[in-house]
Length: 331
Image (cartoon, rainbow, N blue to C red; front, side, top):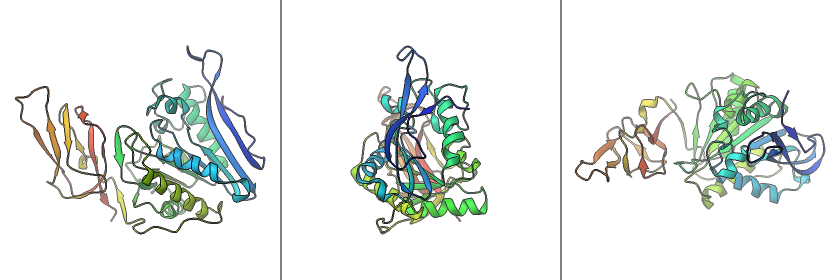
């Protein structure tokens, strides 16, 4: 049972451009549908792979890499079926927002979803119940969005089963990004990765820079990584070689207490960059209080030795906002 309707036929060869139509009645669209764009290419027998982008609507490097690929490939290049959804949460993508303007839903925190729920829950249910199970692998491309910046990394989930763990890790290694961020006990079970784990479908996510734009170097890296992953899965005959520094580190969130959070509202004067190696006690930055000129600035330090996987892209920050995400090497 699903309320969404596909306008493409996933049994047909060739290229098709269409939509998954989401029925949702509101003041802006009382009788219509919200369209989630779908591109599919198939050149013959082979695996089926779903690539998602725009799960968060302000993350752009992944969709840009996907659309480059859609422009460059013809069906004969694809042994199997490639399904691209560059704006999987299209209402959020249209609004340039992390969450949907229709219901404030975060699609990567909505699985397994609900066919009778709000629009975000309906999209999650359709992906969980109708798209992911028909696929041999899923690739989910993210970035830091307007709020943060990540070192480019691939995200395989571990701790599911030996076979699926190995398939996820091999897919992450094939992408060839600088860092592998291993998802374990701290992974959210409402994510795309978790949805694939429940369906026993190999999956890798990626974090690709951020800041709310399209970084050309990161997007080049994303496109090459996507081609390598599809080659690894058997869809594409050729792929770029692994670059120097690929898979140089495998890290995990060991404890949420390792992160640097804002102790108060203020102006964060950052002194770290995604990818930095830091030691406990090193300076993360200073928190200034421009609205309270007599209040001394606060020195912020890292509580743990590790790598800065991501940092905020904001200057003005609120109390308890994450300023720097610190991960540790996997033993």
